[in-house]
Image 1 (tube, rainbow, N blue to C red):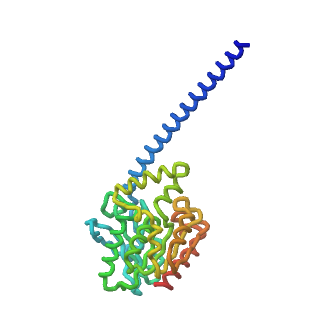
Image 2: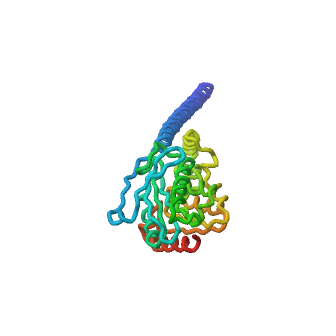
Length: 305
């Protein structure tokens, strides 16, 4: 009996030791996985400050319609742009998204140029044919938009009281940040606009979203951004009295409908919301939503600018 008890005790001790060893191995493996993922995320966020440059192209049939210009920012960067003068005094500025170029918003610009609007499309810093080595996802890009407005208001054919803007993705975030300070931007469309970099990271990162958010915030803060510059929704609260339209694709996996709803709630009146059921991130002109999208954009600026 004593021998059986001893054997049972030895068996329990052995099982505890094995379970303990298994737990330790599991923790080691989990720590290694998190460490590897952290390294990958940190490296990715650092690289994200230097996006690949999209090739800028203007179809041959449009070369006569646009001027190729360059203008300077307050921090001495030369930026590239296309400009077509207005026939009705009204001018719209178009801001592209991350890793894009002015070519990305040419389809929207053409809609308005064909209807008498002046259009100004520029490559943000570190994009397209513009100077600059790094992006900040908004905080430094406001200097680009500020310089674009400064150039436009000097043109005799431009009515400084009739300037509107269209921003897509990172361009929408930039537009919100600058328009919160510059009331000369009278009417705005925000397409696929992120509510904050934190929300972007959480939506994109799934299980590791919080870890991704930590590294992204760290990298951006090191690049000179502060919390208010990365929470774009705060800027929407300061657009009171100026008409805004928020455009969102229901199938957008980059900037989710959740984020669009969030900024719409934060935005001041007057505000409108257009949800496009067939569109992903920046695909508004490429599917069944195109007709409604173009009709809504044109009617919005015709009415409010």
